[in-house]
Amino acid sequence: MAARLAAPRDQDDVLGRLREAVADATVQGADRLPPERQLAERLGTSRARLRRAIDRLVDDGALTRVTGRNGGAFLTDLLAAEPLAPELFAPQPGKVVRDLDNPDGVPAMLAAQGFTSRTEVLAERLVPLPHDEIARRLGMRVGAEAVTLLRLRFADEAPLSLERMFVDPRRFPGLLDHSPIHSLYALLESEYATQVTTVTETVDVGDASQQVARHLGIRPRTPVLIIRRTAFDAAGAPVEASVDMFRADRTRLQVGTSDPCTRLQVGTSDPRTRKLPL
Image (cartoon, rainbow, N blue to C red):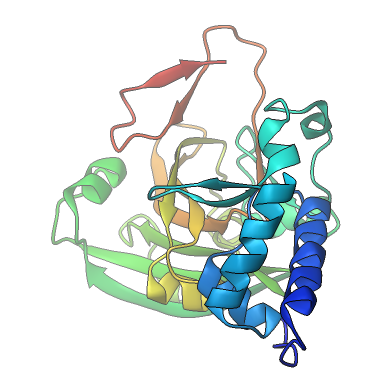
């Protein structure tokens, strides 16, 4: 968070600071200014003085006020510009590409893209399987004993994703003897002769809870990518079921297909519904 500025000398000083904030927002590609309370604190002024400065820029045509729940002070030039500008064809640099066609785990994915990878193991234990959807995906029954792994992934030492995974211990006996497990896929291949060859994933956007936000280093209710995954071996048997929450500001999804009948499952709790043609 930017440091609070010293109190402005007069209303013209507030106006000058607001013009700088508008210029900064333009450079960053934002379409609106922050909420009044937050912006007033940032500029070191009162909300009354800030409103007068905003009114001045509205009169000058630099800002446009929009009322309502999703309203605010919008940058007029960006508001009037065509949506989906050609510049959007250039991917934002520095993001991790989450390739939905590639079954590799997160450590292998990061290494392939040149990021340094680190995993913080938050929990590894046996638990009664808590949900019928997890049981269905793994071919188990609710209440049966399962291994659960909770891990925080880092890319270049910054939090990237939080992952909760469930595994059937009957299939992989002694799995927790290998604790801490940083890469399950690598462990299964080396110790259990099991390789993940295919995955089924659904993608949603949701808000980070306070607990998730704390681990990912973001504000509560910040949008995150929610990826629900079931992994299978070469014989089609389920290997693991998991939910990953990725920071949306650090992740770009990628998917490709050579099959015109292929579908990507998006935005639904039921993977059998709402399939979008690619």
